[in-house]
Length: 260
Image (cartoon, rainbow, N blue to C red):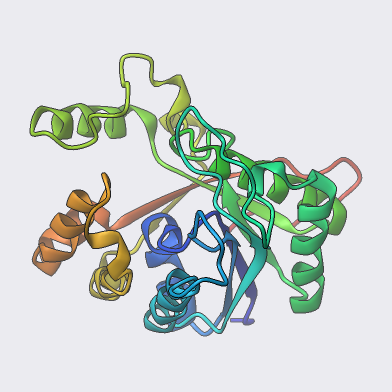
C-alpha cells in the first residue's frame, strides 16, 4: 500500500472529531499522513486576550490522539451561529467575511505544500447549516479547482439523522434546530458514495472529543458533548462508528483512478 497524504478541512476546533475523527485515526493507523486545517480558531473575540488560544490548544491535543501529523489555522475568527453576524474582532476577520479567493488561496497553499492526495471538506449544507461550515464547502471546492486535488465531502445521511434529531429533541437536546424541513441537513442517503467503518477507533475518537474541555460547559451544545464522552466505548462505537462522504465530480479534462 502506498502511503497518501490526506488533508481534513474543518470550520472549528472539535469539528475534526465530530465529522472525521474516526477516519483520521484509521488513516493514521494505516500509515497515511493526515493534516487538519481549521478555518476558525473557536474564538468570537480578540484572540490576543487571555485564553485566546485555548481552542487551538485543545485542537492540537485532539489531533495528537487521532495521530494527525500537522495542524494549520487559516487565521480567521468564528462567525457565530445565529441570526446576527457580529463585527470583526480587532485582530482578524470572521471567516464568512473573508474573500473566497483569499481563503481558498490559503488552503490551496497547504494542499500544494503537502502535495496532498485527498481533501476532506463539507457538503453544501455544511452538515447542519452553520454559516462557517457552508463557507468551508465553498472554500474547499474553490481550493480543489485551484489545485486539482480529489475531494470527499463529509456529510451525514439525512433520513436517519433527522429521525435521531427529532428523538433527541423529545428529551430536551437540539431544540434550536427545525427538523420539519430537513433540506438544510446533511445529504440524501442515496447520494453518499463512501461509508467508512471506524468502530475500531471509537475509543480514540471519544478521547479526542474529551480534549475539547471548553465545549463541555456553559454552551448549548455542551450537554450533548458531555453525554457522548460519558458513554461506554461499545455504545459510543454504535452511535459514532460510521462516517460518511460524498465524492465531488472530477473536473472536466482531469483523469482520476476510481475510488477504492
